[in-house]
Amino acid sequence: MIFTVGGIKGGSGKSTIATNLTVWLSKRGFDVLLVDADEQETATKFTKWREHITRGASGYTATVLTGDAVRQQVTKFKPKFDHIVIDTGGRDTTSQRAALFVSDVYLVPFNPRSFDLWTIADVENLVKEVRSLKPDELHAFSILNRADPKGSDNKDLAVLLSESFVIDYIAPAIVSRKSFANTASSGLGVIEGNPVDEKAVGEIDQLFTKIMGIIGVVIDANFSAKTSVK
Ligand SMILES: Nc1ncnc2c1ncn2[C@@H]1O[C@H](COP(=O)(O)OP(=O)(O)OP(=O)(O)O)[C@@H](O)[C@H]1O
Ligand SMILES: [Mg+2]
Image 1 (cartoon, rainbow, N blue to C red):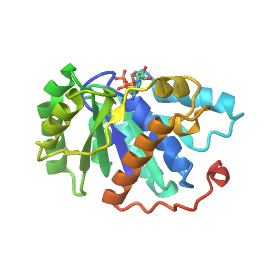
Image 2 (image 1 turned 180 degrees about the vertical axis):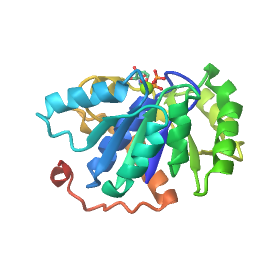
Image 3 (image 1 turned 45 degrees about the vertical axis):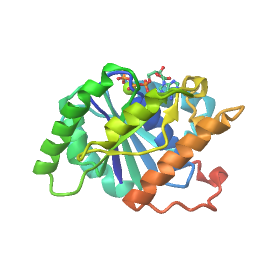
Image 4 (image 1 turned 90 degrees about the vertical axis):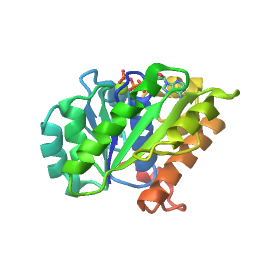
């Protein structure tokens, strides 16, 4: 499967979701390619830290692509990997469009109480446009990220996101937790944190497992994470 993590808003958690998804899939034994299609190169910096901390055994392959090269190169890489995760910037760029044309799944994080919500219609239009030009299906999911641990704002946003006929809202929400920033700054997924943040891991696990269920990716529950590092 090819996953693009994107949207039209900066700082919503795209790189956090993309890097955690990459680590999560690789820990389940999949051969994953992480494509950094954002000129800020957050995913690349993450991988550099990870390579340092794991002494080169990051567990996945990483590359940087921009513009239409995303479409061309990802099409070339497709048969070589089980899954490809593309991290894009927070704008409607050539790179993001190129990524969407070759993707099966589009993941769009939204934050509560932010200007993100104003971009829902724009993201819907982008998805509709790409779908009209693309022969294969593009499954689009909205994710509530940096959610409040308590309060009604999450629910309000979830209701709003659920109203879309173009992008499917998928629960659970990912609550704002320090462990995401702490693990990311050392090139680790939240599932690799030490100490492990059980709540964050639970949310990420539930969310990704649910997405895989919907798109038909079979996860081997008995797979030993230790053997997955390539
Ligand atoms: N669930 C979360 N809990 C706590 N912090 C988070 C969470 N998700 C993201 N962050 C933090 O928010 C900041 C922005 O996240 P991230 O870099 O993933 O966003 P982005 O959408 O990729 O941004 P950009 O548009 O600049 O590429 C980072 O410092 C990250 O650690
Ligand atoms: Mg980013």
